[in-house]
Amino acid sequence: MSVLTKEKMYEDINRWKKEKNAIILAHYYQDGDIQDIADYVGDSLALAQKASKTDAKIIVFCGVHFMAETAKLLSPEKKVLLPVMEAGCVMADMMDEAAIKKYREENPDTIILMYVNSTAACKQYADVCVTSSNALKIIDHYSKLGKKMLYGPDKNLGAYAMEKSNIQMDLWHGFCGIHNGMQPKDVILAKEKYPNAEFVCHPECNLNVLKMANYIGSTKQLIEYVTKSDKKEFIIGTEIGVIHEMQKRNPDKKFYILSDRLRCFEMKLTRLEDLYNCLKDETNEINISEEVSKKAVKCVNKMLELS
Ligand code: 13P
Ligand code: SF4
Image 1 (cartoon, rainbow, N blue to C red):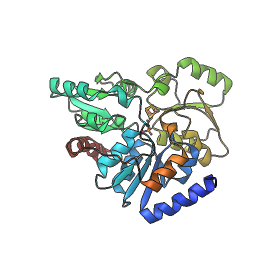
Image 2 (image 1 turned 90 degrees about the vertical axis):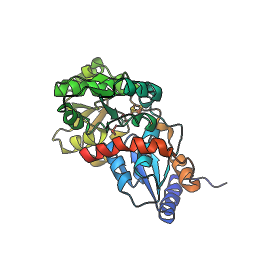
Image 3 (image 1 turned 30 degrees about the vertical axis):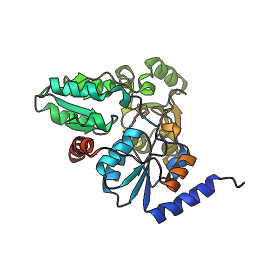
């Protein structure tokens, strides 16, 4: 029986990509093996932008379900595949379609700002979508209209935006388990251990942790920040997968993960073998009903227009 080595899988994947006119998009939280074979690695916004522009016929999305759904919303004519269908997002699951529908009905004049970490079914009720890299800009834009606003599902990013822009919004009660779990005491201990390191983190962390950061940004923004910085050491307050690209771009710098708990179980469900089988057999296609798609795509397009 022949064993499928990483090299053999890379060889076949590269061949199939050409034969099938397929593109592989991967999020920075994916395993290094997957990031290295992807055509494009990015944060949620960059991946959505890439999906909207590609000429490929097949998009294999190595990430979680809401990300592949966003790609499908933007490219309904393309075949969008998610190597592991069960790869979801705990935060996205904290917003239920029936609940947001009810909120919309009861608050017809409220502007609903929807974090991209949400299902397509929920996005139908939003005015605009945001990601961690454009949330502050888009929230600021809407706050000038002087209307009531709801931000969800991430209560932490919402609270951060309210503090930064000095505005009020209703907040949904969702959060990311791994980001929300970071505590100020973890940062204090890490700073004691690495006194020369800067602490950088993702805006999904709670406000007490965000206040201790030298820099806050999306996964892509964090990677760009540590790359441009003159500093040589960084404590990382987001999912461990980002360190792969940070280290690749900065072999002379040191990156310390804030806690061993910073592994997104859902993101790590996808293994190279899953990508291999998915592209080979063209399985796990994302389908969204035309009715949902027509409504949900509007808030994503609005975001791209304002980004
Ligand atoms: P980014 O948009 O920063 O890549 O974040 C996505 C995410 O799920 C963070 O937990
Ligand atoms: Fe969702 Fe958190 Fe995983 Fe990001 S890290 S995909 S918010 S569960």
